[in-house]
Image 1: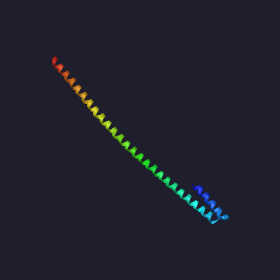
Image 2: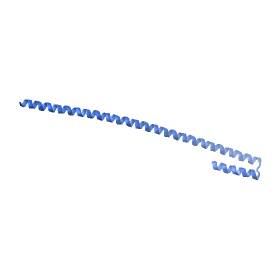
Image 3: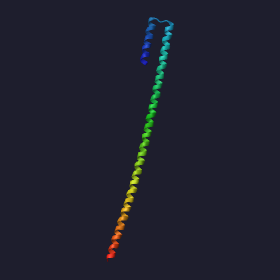
Image 4: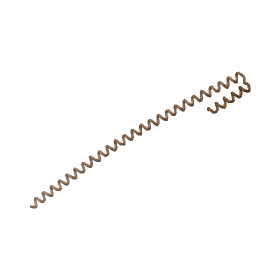
Length: 112
């Protein structure tokens, strides 16, 4: 659109050099003004879209950070649960070993 405006401006300049009546000059100028307005609107629309894209990228980055935080918390929870499970299993193993040793000791005492 900017290129079209430049071309149209060049046509206006050529028309002025060749001689142009007042009405045609005014029509050229009005059309160039409308082109300038259209270019400005397109720039504004583009800037708005770019702001929306950046906002989306920021939201995505925040969401990814939150997901990473939740993943870290979930991993810590799993590790904590694993430690508790390991302790429980060790305690059960120790109790079993203790009972087995006690039974063995009683059996040995009963034999004497």
